[in-house]
Length: 226
Image 1 (tube, rainbow, N blue to C red):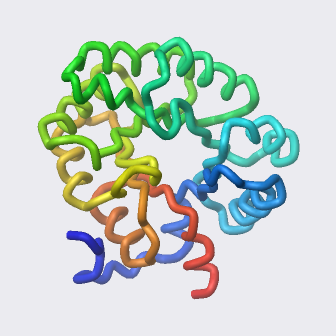
Image 2 (image 1 turned 90 degrees about the vertical axis):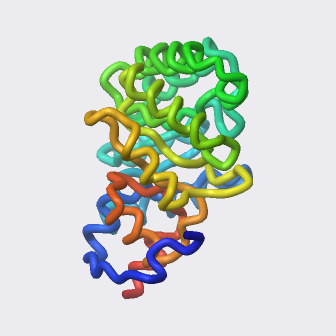
């Protein structure tokens, strides 16, 4: 199903959708002015959070005291060593981040070193403390069996969310992967869909399918005109 929501209509209110969107800007050339604009939109339209590069977290926290800030670590390729990821997470929290989106070590997954995958997630979760940790599986590179193994690692390690994609891989979120996640994660783990979600219908479809969050760069632009 390449175009989620094309066949179905869900009729969610704009406010309901936006309250579950991580309003995202992770482009490598993101300027301070564009980050400020993103944050102002997030405040105005009450999105769940802003998802921004780590280098901007401290400046955003100083300017937007009440905003929920999400940032990324081990991004976008995932193969940073565990100590580096843990240090990134700790620094992000110290700078004022509320939520951390970490890319799983895709090479460990492909090599079926699932105990190492779980160990790394647990270490990064410890570095996050009480802050939310979302683990990005980057599903476009994984088989279904590997996705299931990541679900198990995320559950066992105590992460808060499993997330489909970085948006920088060869493909983004699919409804099929959300369904696979839902059938293989523990009851305490939530789902975030991200990557290539560019229509209102797709936003609604992923939320209706059971995602607690959706990562998108265009949600405010799509919905503020409606």
